[in-house]
Amino acid sequence: MTGTWNRIDPIRQTEFANAVAVEIERVLARRDQIIDDDAIGSAGRIAGAIAAAIALLQPSELRAIDTMQERLPDRVLQFVRILAAEAGGQATEASASSGFEGRSIHVSSRPAGRDDVDSMRVEDWAGRVAGPTFLEDNFGISRSTLHRWQRSSRVVALRTGGRKHVFPLAQFVDGRPASGIREVLSAMPNPRRAWHWLIRPAAVLGGRIPIELLKQDLVADVAVAAQHEARMKLA
Image (cartoon, rainbow, N blue to C red; front, side):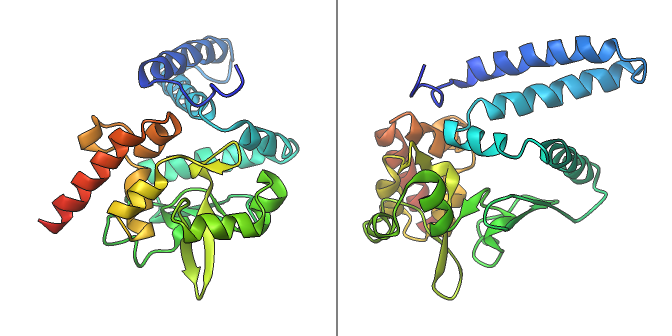
């Protein structure tokens, strides 16, 4: 199964989420503290969605999370409360520590638009990011290799102030950037807007997420979609 973890298609992912949800609902139904059937159903669906997302993580990311065993329950509770606050409109901005080089990820009450990403903090919209030190220590990517990839547009680098850059972790597969990022950056030279497009469902790709397709080696499909997106913005 090694090397196939990131090739779960959307249908199988949904089936997996539903299966987890059913099992969670059965467990919760046996707990005396939870008697609301609607609450049990909601909890099951939430757990299923989280489990399906975890199934898409890289093995290195799962191992990194596993090292946080003592703090993990608190982190998970904090994360779920952030989701609840966002969904209920109880806060305009909630935050949770990402654990990556001491950086924080802020969850905004509204999704970032294309115009927002140029001015917003990277952590507010780009997902998990890390600097060269983290990538070298945890992914085995040397600074010289990272610099070479950056200069050849093989990796998305997001500037956070001055000349400092961070790198979204979702673009790496087995310690290397996913194939096709160069083609996307060629069509969308602005790294922030390119990454914003890469991590969100694209209508031209049938609602699929471009970066996940690149991880499945569907470079041609994503490259054509990126060129189409760029033309639409110029029209």
